[in-house]
Image 1 (cartoon, rainbow, N blue to C red):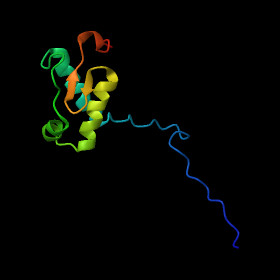
Image 2 (image 1 turned 180 degrees about the vertical axis):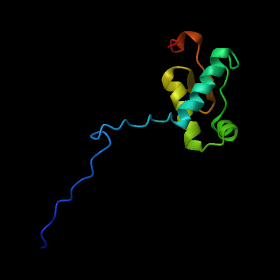
Image 3 (image 1 turned 90 degrees about the vertical axis):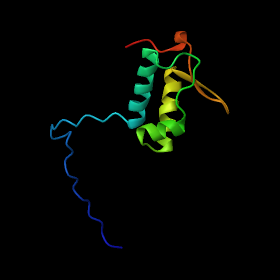
Image 4 (image 1 turned 45 degrees about the vertical axis):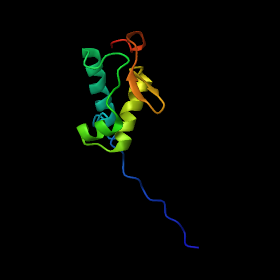
Length: 100
């Protein structure tokens, strides 16, 4: 077998004191925030359906997985709940997350 050489690693930007670029907000999160803003404004009332994944795909020009992640994010935050085979609906106001 040939002897292996250890390669010197290039120094990382952190070790050089270079600040990292801020991370971008994921697209699904931006979509979810926009829908949450619609809910807060009263454009979508409690117990009314939010746009379907297909409608979100068309409106924002995103893939199905991105639309699905946006809806899941709304559920996780407490803005919406899903009824199987029926759709996703806006939660009652007392279930909404507190303002930041």
